[in-house]
Length: 157
Image (cartoon, rainbow, N blue to C red; front, side, top):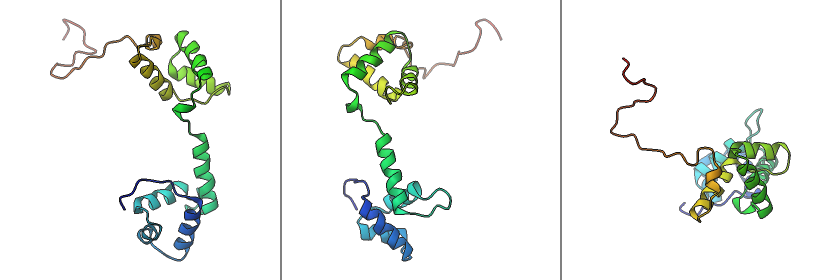
């Protein structure tokens, strides 16, 4: 269809269910809704009812809304939250530990990937936070063209 992706709206979910009940195929539903057929297929697969796989628009809408509520945006990482994360990183905690602890205590829902992105962005801007990472100072080297010598003892067969 060639247009930018846009999430399926609630009305479209009801239309989709009605068309499916009327016996229309996925390709036909996609044409009617002016969507790509893979979008319709993915919507049905992702939000189908768990027990029998049938598509119920009310259930699908609640599933999609739940995922949206549960998702985190980097822009929602406030200065107060950054301060909390920074304090834990300065105690030599890994981003995985920081994320897990804050989530367990119910203080913040943040993924370790978000923390890593924030740390590397800070480094690009001249910050020193990356030095708090346990493996942050390790040099990683390319190994192509070399024989693998990891796990071998020198001078041994």
